[in-house]
Image (tube, rainbow, N blue to C red; front, side, top):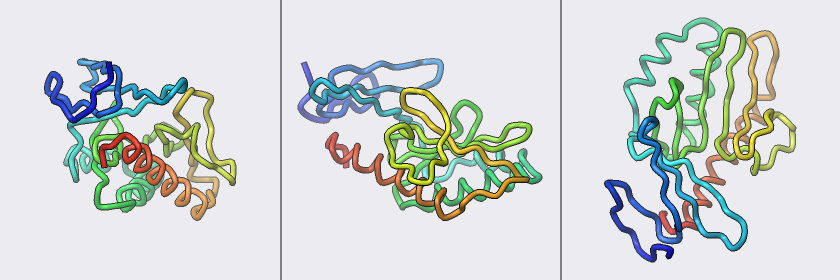
Length: 174
């Protein structure tokens, strides 16, 4: 039976219209599966997110050079989306949330940087920057030697942020 009000469930907030809670103890992550008619939707929540996570500054310092500069530049754009953006290091890379709900991340690899979106499969991408085939997530692959349409990527980040705010509002958590 769905919850009808905010409740504390095992130390986690349980959102009103959610039918199921699954906690991954190893990742310290929770997935909430809301009731939305026949269509099910998931929010990737991080109760440990904070306004500014010192671990991200360490990560940025450890990733210097061209790739680090790309990651830092785009994570700043993500951070600047709104006052409600919170962050944490998840799976070893900077992750941004609207409140507790993850919406974007950056990660540096040996030859590229990903700017990723937790609900990227469902957001508008008129410039077709997004890559990936997963059920929910998509990313934009950045390489130092290849220019990216900065305006289009900024718009994509803003769209992901607005999309997550809308999902949270619809779930009654904003």
